[in-house]
Image (tube, rainbow, N blue to C red):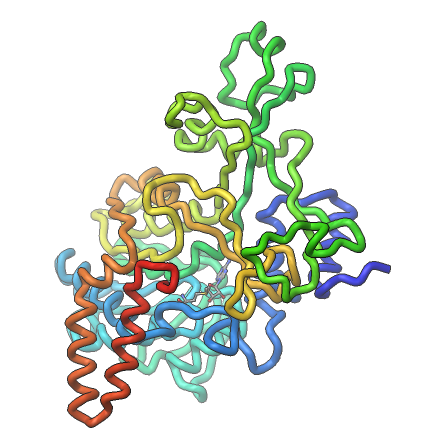
Length: 447
Ligand SMILES: C[S@@+](CC[C@H](N)C(=O)[O-])C[C@H]1O[C@@H](n2cnc3c(N)ncnc32)[C@H](O)[C@@H]1O
């Protein structure tokens, strides 16, 4: 019998044997958040987590407190600019990791007592039970009890005894017109599952039923090859595969067993390939070629779409700006999304990454033990937000370095370094400077 690299790989292979190859999004969802053996929900060994030197990756809030402080200041500035509402403010964080970012933001907001006292509740959207506990311990104390209700898990924060509620999805957080939500999403969207498609030239004889946008006349349909989006699906690699036979790219470390799975192109349209690439003018333009420099579409072109990201962006927008289902007398609140992705409005392609112990590995090696992420399509988030709510404005994206510099990182680092030096801790001052240089490094070594 074939040996699979992880129990999750075995389970996935058994499922694929019954259903046939699965969409990349289904594979990603299982690898990251499956009840048993998902990367965030269970596979990590006792005493180890995903973050830091001993883990798989480092995130900006874990590098320096200054990151969370400046995000906190951004929300304070929004609260002031929107009229300093004295109650009904909610802080919502999606994907809060170890809770460090929320802790740094809350500590900063305490310096603005009028805003601090306007906060009614804190909500944390977290899929991982272990990280939920780490967040509770940091924000409420190790001995603080956590209780369970229909909505989620509850505890009381060490700052102002604010109630904190943990939910598994944002949909579980109540929406009310008088609330002013401030929503933080740092390295969350890149963990949401993507679908991947390729534009293929299909001979007239193999033509499948036309896609909804296909307006070609019946005569042209039968005579010329046409372009169709085909979905990339995940299936097991052939037994006995090696890194060489699978041509694992040199950019990916081979310190893992050979990948258990591989991407293959669907031979026929799938439910997703018929619908998702037709769901936005940006994707449709790739098929017509209207935005390409040649004016023609490129056979072989790739496209990644993250429906969950659009759902989250639409939810943020409805909370802030109101929607038909959840009207609001006036828009209030803000969301700050920081993540990896193209800043020029282009659609991400070929961006799925596997990370293990700080190295790039195949995303199909050791499923459940490998972190998976993909570039965030900021333009798609903006499109989903404005479509969901007429009351929201979208700004950006700008690169993280520009954001932090405009928010005053140099000034804050100066204050921290002078304080460290005054206490005779010159080495600490240097460490603060080094960490913050990394946060604004625009090169490959930066965040
Ligand atoms: C890369 S970590 C980022 C953590 C944190 N924001 C930071 O910057 O340190 C991703 C976080 O999102 C959570 N997460 C991933 N997928 C999720 C999902 N589908 N629903 C809810 N939380 C999710 C993970 O458990 C983790 O807390």
